[in-house]
Length: 134
Picture 1: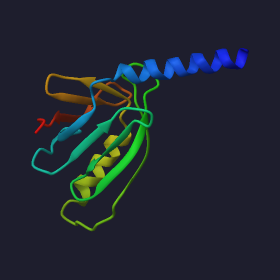
Picture 2: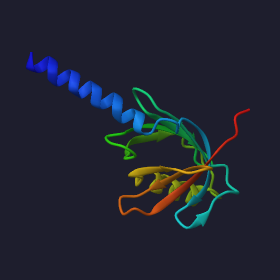
Picture 3: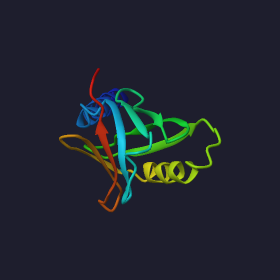
């Protein structure tokens, strides 16, 4: 009986927590990483909220994918990211900086144009603009 109660409580918390970031599903263009304007690079992010909370996209040269947890409200715990490994010497540093910042994301703020991804100190480290639905 206790186990059933605990499981039901945990399941309801998981469902509630996923709803805290409801509406962030979709495709985004990354415009800012750290203090750098990256709008000229083809950096994208797709978010799919659900059982696995998936994230994927293009990090200037390579494709990446992974998952994240949503333990409470707008908080994020990034999981392991994987991706392709094509050689793009001219984009290597840009790609590296984006991935480093992406792994530091601790929370999300929904804006009028997309998302601000924030580190644990409360600093906006990535700005993502939502792509228009076509």
